[in-house]
Length: 375
Length: 248
Image 1 (cartoon, rainbow over the protein chains, first blue to last red):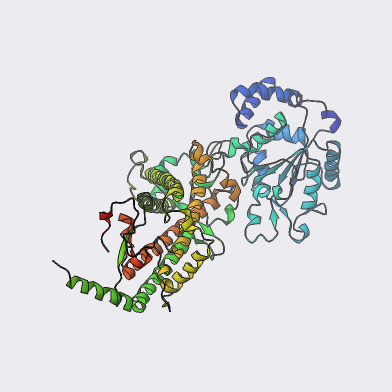
Image 2 (cartoon, rainbow over the protein chains, first blue to last red):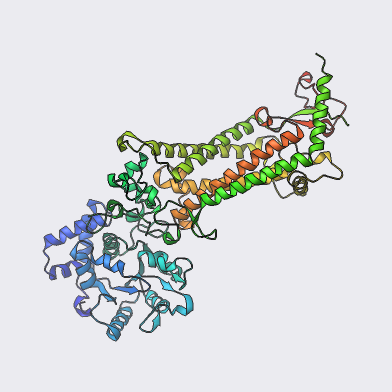
């Protein structure tokens, strides 16, 4: 981390050059990051210009109830300028996991940033906030996560909710949610919040989001759930390379069958790709090497709200709470239809008994009319 | 034994009958294809993907049937404003005293099979009875649920403005998972409705012999002559030629 005075007036471009990168490296990086921001090639000039003229935007990165997989994912985003230079060396003023300082020094650094850049810094939040038991389930430097979040959110320009924890609550919010783990947007109401769900989100997606905010000073275009459209507007299913097998009705029936070996669609072994909005099918993971479906495992919808409570991972089922563990809509429907069929049978027999006089009258009258027919 | 004379009454107009049977077809196709989509059978395992498109076709049929179901519903709503009194929205309006009196009567006599101390001919419904009306309101609500959740799930595959009108449903409910669960669950309500509906139609036809089943084909039901206002004269509308309605 650079000290405040040193970096105050330097632009991102100047910092990058100071770190020993050439102009050519810089332009390559601009091309790369423009693509990952989901922008057109014609925007290259604007991105380069923005990085050349923008001075550093301070970033405070808070960690609450999380597993650090978001940070892990981010530092593996495949261009060194992203994680090492832009974030770590230039902008990141506080992240208790990665920063060199610890204890009082770290907290002092955060406090200094919050005071000096009040209303200017970006707050990145990794992890959900437990509200149960006065927030005692997650404490940092002797204070509850909620307390810490509210303090750092107060002076933030904008908030990025990294990962499913901060966006949706993730597994710690699974039923019955013992710590009352709560996503950020349900606690902070008065700040713009961008949600970048996923467990973890793809490193390049995180890079694209943060670079967009740093370079343009505003959020990328968001969808109805506050997610950047560039990455979350398509289902994993719609960009899946196994999609032709789905349309052809060729499915893996179990993980050790011939169909699995042939690489058929994983729909019937519980792939949640058709309900999951993410960029895994296009950007992929680990520098574009693969993603779960390519490795033969169905998507389990980690970037969707409540994915942890929506039925089993390896079955295509519609899980419902309050109807017994893992009962599906089909089971309930079949039982209800069976009970109903029984009730109809009972009703039919009872009707035949109780209404017998009425019906036999009709029959008698009908027979009499038949005998008196004139033909 | 009192002789009962019946008059033939035109209850279900042609648009109502057409709506009914298109709806039957659409709901059947939607339920069957919907259940196939949720749990596709393992077939055609020896074919290459390039030779087959059956699952895509099933989904295509589902979406086509959904549009038919939706537009059919719109037309029925229109007809509830211009159709006869049995087709009118007023026949479904649940906030009247008469409706609930008839509701109690039907529950007592037709569901719990009790005897009425003093049978009142006015309790015999000519169109649908009050319990049926309530069940159609419930079905209408569930149909709306299916339309909203279905088009919401479909919207991302379409650029047309109509499905795009429903994109707000997914964020409102929290994601495709829950939307799909509701969509799937509601299908079973249709199936349960059909079981009850078909049984009760047969039950009424069997018990009363007034053309309950055939009314949805020809539109006529047979109504006790005592229900007609003028019992001495021909009491059908004067617009009709007198000779057409002579049978009693």
